[in-house]
Each structure stands twice: as structure tokens, then as C-alpha cells.
Amino acid sequence: MSKLIPGNNKHLTLEDRIYIEESLNEDKSFREISKYLCKDPSTISAEVLKNRIPNTWNRGSFNNPYNFCIHRFRCKKTNVCEKIVICDTYCRSCHKCNSVCKRFERETCRRIEKAPYVCNGCDKPRNRCPVSTKYNYDAKAAQRMYEDRLVSAREGISLTRKQLHELDATVKPLIQQGQSPYMIIASHPELNISVSTLYNYIDQGVLLTRNIDLKRKVKFKPRKAHKTQITNRDVFIGRTYKDFLDSHANEEPFWEMDTVESAKGSGKCILTFYFPDIELFYARLLQRKTANAVKDAFNLIQERMGGEYDFICLFPIILTDRGVEFGDPDSLETSPGGTVRTSIYYCDPMRSNQKAGVENIHTMLRMIIPKGTVFTDLTQWQIRKCVDHINSSPRKTLNGSTPYLEASKRYSKDVINALQLRYVAPDDVVLTPKLLKL
Image (cartoon, rainbow, N blue to C red; front, side, top):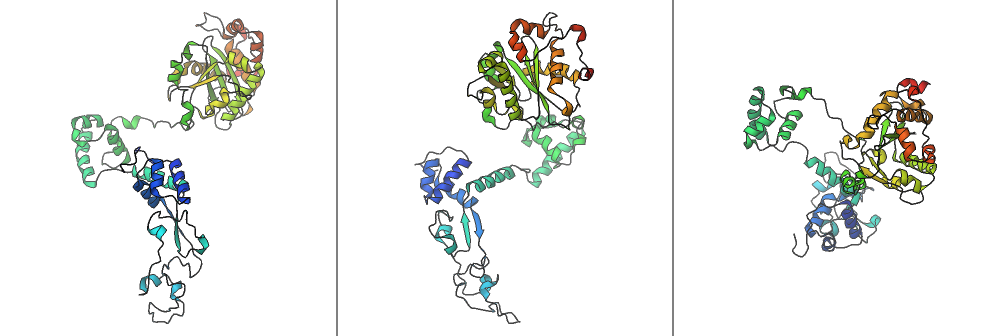
């Protein structure tokens, strides 16, 4: 590292590579680029050399991609390879010309042989350049090549064949004696690997020991991969469950939010809300499980409530999971007019117990709409019936009262009407699939 340039010990990012490309197009030197990026000039040089893209133009004999001789434009030699059958074709058009001709002199370009090693920033028009193989630096292509190398460098086993044989000679007899990988690693620290690494080696088949030789592993089911979670981690800044607790939002009235998915065959889902204070349940049917569909539902609820102020009075804080349908919190927290209407917080991954209320109320909803039900023919009117019957069920935590009666005491009639909540007599409450057929 140059003493004049303080390094940051970071890999180059896409933004850094875009700056390198723009600077090369402006014909800046590596030292000028390195000062701005806080890198050593050799880092920039290695980046350009490693990720430059060759581009060979093939336009006849003068730009023959196999002919790099500086004499090819006026050369009229034939049969340089001295074939038995006389060849009348000019050798400059043959791919053997460079290897057999004694007058061959390789054509070079200072910009390619030395810094900057690419054609970016060259003043000469591309169609007038005699060099057949040109090199360009493209930021996005360089980023892709970097990511591919990063992944491939971390693949495979970082052990030689001899080391694997020595490892297997220690592990296999002990596994056959009934010992677990943890016991083996604890008894043999000289192996210098972790328990998870040993499990991975066995699972990948690089050792003679197999998964079936382990006592318990074959009984375990593969862990399900959650592919529907939010990938943009920036949305969690200031909205994590820790932020929820640090802001004492759990001590204020807040709602829990989630979705109930349809079985395969329909893209519909049910957006559910749960108010833990009085166990009030509310739901809306969405035509698709997307962030825009959730935003439209919020806007519709706000419109029915009468405005942003009424919305924030009812839904001041909302706690939800990290489903992809909740991946645009800014549009949920802000009304179409630009006014803040609520605050969104996210539970930690794989911690559904942090919003246990809405998870428990789903069990009552599933009594009416069992798992495996396709939502194709489901309507909002049927969802409203489910909500009314669930809210009219007495709760032990409410001393025998119902969420609907508690909501009637807590909110005005306008709020009850806006949510379209209806009273159901105790003897008329139905929590079976028959409700949707009534």
C-alpha cells in the first residue's frame, strides 16, 4: 500500500468500478483514480487487467483475428508454409501465417501493452484502429466477473488428497464405533476443523463416511428455505424488533399484521390485523400477495376511515414479519398525500413468537378456512363474515367478553362502521367451514 494513500481494506464495489470506468474514459491515470478511491495504484491496475474484456474485430484479411502481423496490410506472400500443393491464397488470410512466417512482427499498442491496458479514453476512432484485438473496461461486466470469482473461490474443499485420507482414517473408525462428529472433534483438536465442517464433508461425500452412518441425521427432514422474505436489508434500518422495544412501542397500542396464503391454484391471500389489547381481529382479501396490493389495502382502509389522522389514531404502530409483501414500508407508512400515517416494525427472522397474537388468531381463521383451501372463489364479503364470528367469540383473557364488545366500548360507531364490524349473537357463532356456505 502506498504511504501517501490511506487504504480502507475493502473490496471494490459497483460504484467504485463505475468511477473507474468513467475515469478511464476521461483518460485519467491510475494514481488519480486510486487517490479518490483510497486504494493503491496497483489495486486499480490489477482490477483493470483482470476484468478487461477482449473484443476481436473480424473484417476480412486486414483485420483477420488470427493475424497480428504489422505487415499484413501490404503483404503478398503465398505458400509460406510450403505445402506440396501450391496455394495461391495470400498468407495474410490464413490462420497459420503468424506461426510460420519468418517476417512476422506482432502488432502492438502502447495503451494495451502498458497502462491503462484498455482502449477506454483513446482518441483514435475505433474503425480506424489497426489493432485487431481491443480491450475495454465495463463496470457492470467487471462486477459480474468479480462476483463469479468470489463464489468459485469459496467452493469445493480446501484440503489436499493426502489430508482428506488422513481425516477419513481418523473419522471413519470412530463413526463406526457410534461416536458423533462433535465427540470426534472434541477428542481430536489436531484435525483443526469445526463440527459443522465435518458434517458438510460427510454430506458432500468427500469422505468414505456417509450420512447413513450417522445415528440421527437420517431422521431429520431438510430445513425449509424461506424464499419469500425481504432481500433489501435497508428497509430494516430503524425498524427492527429491537428498535420496536427500544422505542417502547410495545407499551403503546399497536397492531400485529400478517398474511394467510391460499393453497396452490390461486394468487389471492388474506391480509390480517390483530389488536392484542382487546384481541380484535380484522382482515382484507388481497388479489395477489405483493407490496402494491398491501399498499392499496392500506389506502382503502384510510379512505374508509376518513383520512390520515383517523388512520394513525387507529393504527399508530404495526408489527409484522419480513414477508416480501411488506417490503415497501415507506409506502405503507406514508399516505398518498405524503403524510405519515403509521410506523412499521419487523420481527426478527424465524421468530413468529414475537407476534404470537396474530399467529394464534390464524388458528381460529383456519377453523373456518382450513389449510389446503384454494381462495379462487373467496370474496371480501365472506372474509367479513369470518371476522365478525371470530370477534364475537368470548375470550377468557377478556373475562368472558368478546373483542367486538370491547371494541364498541373503546371506539366510536364511525370506527366500527368503517371497519365493517358486525355483532353476532353467541348462539349464532359458527367457527367451521359451514360458515362460508350459509
